[in-house]
Image (cartoon, rainbow, N blue to C red):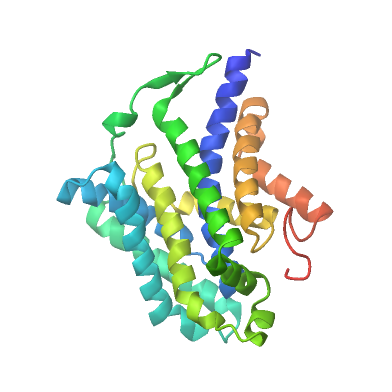
Length: 291
């Protein structure tokens, strides 16, 4: 096999891994702090893509500003839903949150389907990111390289914010040891709504990045959410670093699986999840006690 073909699939895996990493990062933060299995995360990803589309079609705002505005708007929507609906169920069985977010997913998907149809809408690649870059061994689309680099930058910034700042220390403590954090006098509940909005914004950011590569459709998030849940489990429930590493790992493994074993391409992520759970029940970077 030509090295260029292998490298091409590795890059494609990193692109898919970038989406998995951003989505699982937000999901891990929400689950870690709120213990909410947010089935709505895929719908928020879809709303981010539609946000970029609507901003371009209705207001004339291009991709660059949409990368900021769409996540902000979706993050605000996430905060509103958390305040109005989700927080009333925290004291109940987690199954109620799962059912509520599943219902909200159907509502959001059907709402977008009503306005835009099931076929979805195209979103062109930004002019300043068109073309391809010669990397020596392989020529690769500029936009896809941008997705890899931008996602890595966001993951590093989020890691820095959570690991090196006081705000991050509080969020991380509340994520990993919520009861102990409350016992130390820190108002964990104060951070719940902003953290949920932050997780929603990360999902929307992934959606904006996906818009020029994939058809913007109401069901685009439903195709990803199960894989993203598997990524979170592989990385370790509630683990920030684990969600990022597992996201890129799953992206590359599935891309190489599609190259060498196409018949198993769609199930490789679940085989990987089963192997990880057998060897490390808490996930690659999960805390056994927290799990």
